Length: 385
Image (cartoon, rainbow, N blue to C red; front, side):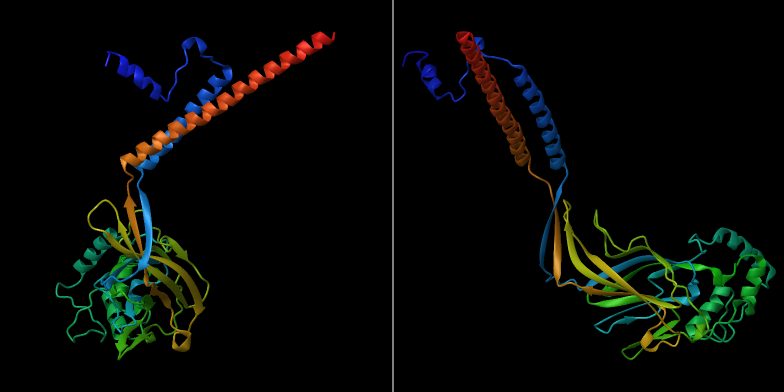
């Protein structure tokens, strides 16, 4: 084969014919379309890059066949108008399991009406001064409420807690020597004007159930959950509260818990505030190896008035009743492949360039046609004259 014959033979397969430079025409409309096309390509390319570096979340809904039959409930709730010694936390479920007056998993913190914490540093100094005044072997009376005959109640809170555990009616705290001394020393404000912050994490079965925060002593009697409010006979409770956090399991990035940072205020006297939650089991998987198992939920609520005698009206308190959906949501965080990104980028550049070329050809041919038509009309007018 003669040299140069192969390259000349391949030219017939060139799909990109190139006109001579002398035959190329540059127009103002073409320049305008080129600038617009370049701007559109830059915008779409930036969008594509942002979409590529931002992972997407794929959602699937399937039947829950998991064998994990336990879950955790985390909460952080403030009652600005109910002292800590009055409140107890209980949980129960449809399997019959009950936990009354939970203390190990729940931390109570005394707060003021505005929700701020009590100044314990100042109080501790005042308590030290009070203890120095007392005899070294001082053992405060529990006024018959102690679990043992020789039990000591050296603080106002310990006396009130002993009464609450016994289920006895709690009189005005000022009648107790410890409360009176602490109040005079300035280490105890009017305790009935304090509030309480409860922070806890409960381990429960993964079945329908409830947990509640309510005044009084609670205990199980057979399969019946009983609340004894005799210790607070004659009292009226204002159960306004703020739910700072409520979740059923760990929280994944971007998860929204509807009751987080919720304020509940109601003028009902000694209300029974019931929240009804629908839990949807959720598995969240990202680029780490271990998926996160949690629950999303939706909520409605109801408020009604009660009496301290209980009965069909219920008892005052805040109740969280939850049902669990048989469906499970799988959320999978995915990152697009570089090949997909490259394909989309080429499609953007090629698509915009092709559309711009078609528009440019249409505008150019239209202008040529109009110019030719205008010339013909002028020639006709000249011939007529």
